[in-house]
Amino acid sequence: MRHVPFFRWVLTLGVLLITCSAAVYAAVPEMPELRQIELTVLREEPDGACTVRWTDPFDHGEHEAAHQCDARRADSLKAPNYDPETGYGWDSGFVVAEGSARGRLYTLGQDDETIDDRIDLSDTLVIIGLLLATAGLVGGNIRAAARLSGVRPDIVRRAWQLAYGAAAVEEDHTRAVEAVRAAWAPLQRERVHEEMGRVPVKSLRNDAKQRFRTKEWEKGGIHTARDVLDAGVWKLGQLPDVGRRTAEQAVAAARHLADGASQDVLVRLSADGRSDPRTTSLVTALRVLVEAGPRGKEAADTARELAERLEPLLADADAASTRSAMFRAGPERRGRARAAVAGLRRILAEAERDALVRRFGQTSVDLLRGPDNELDALAAWTDFERRPEDYYRVLAEVTAAGSGWRAPSPGGGESVEV
Image (cartoon, rainbow, N blue to C red; front, top):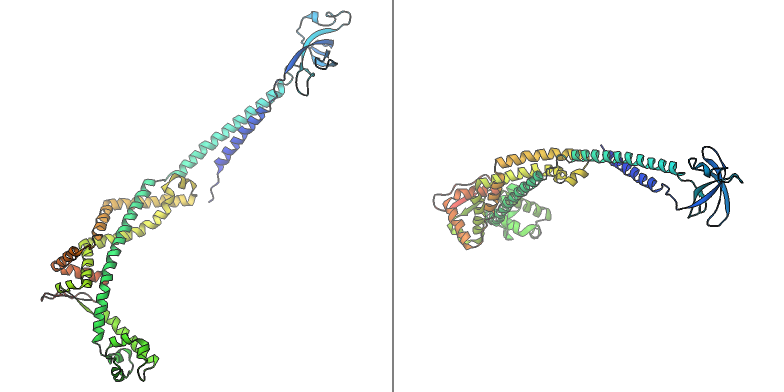
């Protein structure tokens, strides 16, 4: 539903009426500059209505006009007492002393009715305008207060802090896992390469279900599946009686064997491996996850789940983060924001109950303890010899390849089957 700014229009109308009132009041005629003169009363009625003659003090011409004489003046000033010979009376009056009406006879109070009407109109307009403006302000503030209900910047801020903490834990754990996988990959490839060197080339016939002439291949120096992989399709196709299709089938069969071998190779980790930088890198990378322990993985999983819950709620709650954003939002968005704030409040209560902020912080600290020097590598090997089963378990969880781990052999060297 589209928002209709009703009270805004009411306020606008009120301000417009107040402006019109000011304009009407400004248009009220003012008393002009006057000059008093003597009037000769030619005729006069008992109510004071009379005809007078006067001499214009500006152009010195004589004029006659109807006038309202002062009926309450002394009788001696009235006709015929004032001048028995002519029968005229006497009175005083005013003429306009400026403007286009200069010299024109002016009766005091002649504009009072017009002035009063305009002042009354101005007063009416300003009263109605003030009432409308007050209604618009009060109604608008009430509506604004209703629209701003649900603004909870503190909750949104705390939820974002929790989301940042969860994202940091997930990122740190992912970085630690990738470090282990990066150290594991060359050792795995090397063992697969060794294993493929023990597979005779004639075994490819069983895997590909093709009758390859492997004796001719052996004459060309292709004795094992590793040789097939090393040669590739182009070099293998250069052998006598080996076409491109046969070479592609042979390489595909060798790759299939290599993929299977990568799931079953044995990697031995022992004190003898300290001289191998790649094995040392694997052990030191594993130590970070081992030190973090199962709680580290649990914290990362919790952080990942929490981030998925927070993401849509934070997007909807964005309008509730500030008053200005909530005020600009439409009804539908405000409703989503209020519902999202309620969901964030529940999540924050759960996080506080489970002390997730503290757990995330501690896990991030544990996961950031990477190897910096040879002493760290030595400490990692020492820790591995003390609890090799923990290193095997973590490596199995990280690589997630194969049927499981082979228990450490009692002879001293530890081996792992993936």
